[in-house]
Amino acid sequence: MGMASGELVSAEGQEGGLSRATEEGIRAVLDGRAGGRARFLLFVGPAVTASIAYMDPGNFATNIQAGARYGYSLLWVVLAANLTAMLFQALSARLGIVTGKNLAEHFRDALPRRWRFAAWGVSEVAAMATDLAEFLGGAIGLSLLAGIPLMAGMAITAVATYGILLLENRGFRPLEIAIGAMVGTIGLCYAAELLIAPVAWGAAARGLVTPRIPDAEALTIAVGIIGATVMPHALFLHSGLTQGRGAPRNEADRRLLVRFSDREVMVALALAGLVNIAMVIMAASAFHAGHSEIAEIGEAYKTLTPLLGPAAGAAFLVSLIASGLSSSVVGTLAGQMVMQGFTGWRIPLLVRRLVTMAPAFAVVAAGVDPTRALVLSQVVLSLALPVPMIGLVLFTGRRSVMGAFANGPWTKAAATAGAAVVLALNVVLLAQALGVPVPGLGD
Image 1 (cartoon, rainbow, N blue to C red):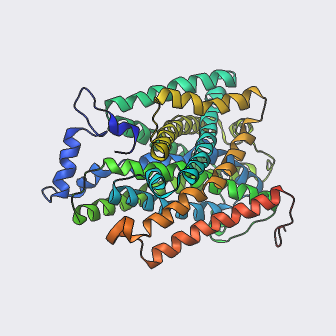
Image 2: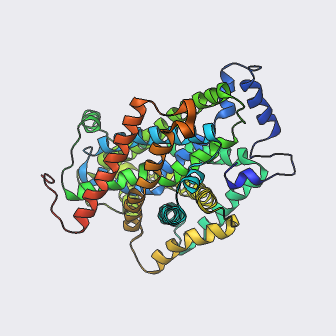
Image 3: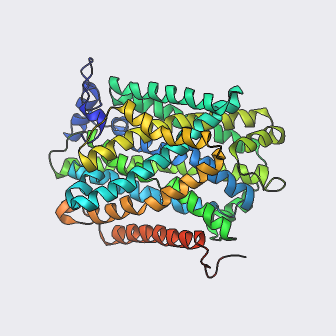
């Protein structure tokens, strides 16, 4: 198995991250000895784990800004980004199932040494930007909830995330269950927010289906939404997580595993997309009319409580803390997989945790606005996205790699178009950052 947990064997006899009972159940399904709807649950885990990347604190920051400043206008960006993410997560899972290798390992095999290390460097920068957002988000939530300094919140977050990571020693299922519980918590919190907030559902529906970029600042936020939704580390991670779901012995096994994986991706990413849409709708409903200047998470919480009541504020903070803790755990696992896949090197998870959270402590110590750092980290992620996206388009489109599971013409066209749009948005964003006029942008 390509990820760190794949090399662990616990005292309970769990190997490859799953208990023997689960492994035997999966084998029974693949052999046709078990049926029923419950069999799908044996394969659930990879997409749910990866989906937390689509509900991390970076999403909170960009979605709050999108809703507060532009109301429901940028909802279509969230929807488009989520559909793109769904396609690429499915491709990532398929790559791991069919080939038995994760995406980073395919890069290592395909690229010359110089280009391989360049791609690894870009992916590591993305991993650090990811952890910056996730770690800061959890710390901000704890700081606001407990009324403690941000540095203290960061220290508690560091200890808590490492404690959750230790669940990996008991097999990967306990870790998946913990992450799944936090995903459910985030979803319930935002369902409650929508019941409390005064939503203009007609305007929200129009925002979902009407592409529009009001001005240059909206473009920056839109690219940030894409960076916070289609996550580089999630694309690398998913291809490794699926390697632990059964050992396919023939094409029929692989086809069944791909079918289960596609179903899980659709369900998990649809729920993640609904949470992101709910974030923007909540911010638009609560802030756009009279508080459109809100850009910080802390400011959003302090404004939300008097506007919609303490229950709304509490739900916001609980979801933020759950998001920060779970996504930071997943980000650490993804970073470990990326390093091991590209280079073959392996370091202890504790060392990995310390290295990736160092930028977050540096940002706070330097006095940088945490929410601004969150938004900029999502732009960095968007700039790093072409590496895994282009890799997935190329690898999953090759019959020499995928055999009969290589992308068909329609899938190849959709994946190529998705990667091209992200590249185009990145070019526009860089032009904007350099002060180059962008034709057709603005009111």
